[in-house]
Amino acid sequence: MEYTYDDDLEELCPVCGDKVSGYHYGLLTCESCKGFFKRTVQNNKRYTCAENQECKIDKTQRKRCPFCRFQKCLNVGMRLEGNNNNNNNNNSS
Image: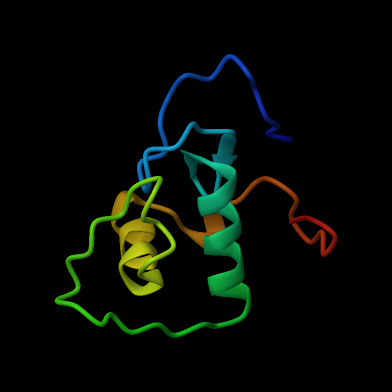
């Protein structure tokens, strides 16, 4: 089953509040959080938080703390096994 961008979607990404682009890793998320989650998991990245692990993650500040952003991805339910989009496609972004 292929999930693609839908201009009619008006929901907001549960991670950062940007406009969703489709189902990614089990949830409706934006392209930015989809890519961030994918890179983090595929590259086995480990982040640390310079604050108290309570950083605000929104559209304008989502790049400030990758640790808190990844934790929020997990907390809202993003999961690798939930990805039905571009499975085994190394050319996807």
